[in-house]
Image 1 (cartoon, rainbow, N blue to C red):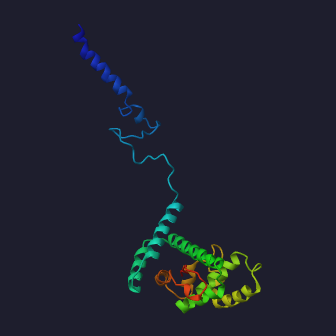
Image 2: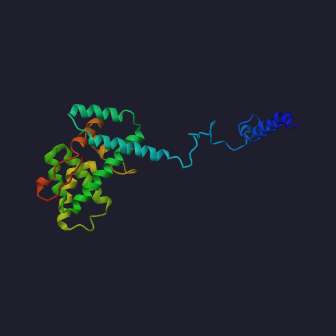
Image 3: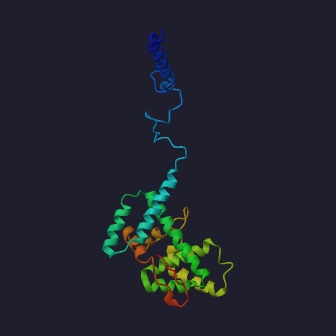
Length: 227
């Protein structure tokens, strides 16, 4: 009698498993209003379902710009080779990505200039070193100094000697420090292009001047003033 009931019990167990399965036709997983299952057949995790929040578009763009800037500043080679590398890096970037890249390199330069002030540098010291490294870049660094001083409201606190030097620097900067974008702030690459350089040439200059030796001025600084 027990042997005759075995097939019947096996059929009942099979039916019960089908009722419990979320993947059976017409079951909960097939209902349009039910919760989406986070596992595939075989128990593997669904790769399109993540517990953590997805990064924002702005964050992804910033990270992309940071990686691009790092590759550019670490690049070495001839002017022709660097121009080719810059073209390859920038060709796939949209206008907002180029601006983000410009913002990052501008902040980097402003930070280094601020560090130089803390180490005892004066405005004409920096202007002199950059002028010796590349005369056409002197108005650019002068614009950086002038714009930074205005942003920090340092004129009201600076000694008279500094004020006199800043006047000379402002004359050197000319219109490049007047604010190439009053709404979004001063940007290095935009200013360099405004001075007559092409976009690729501006970035080649930034790369090649990113480690200007500042020790020759006798200030004791051992850092670089990229431009």
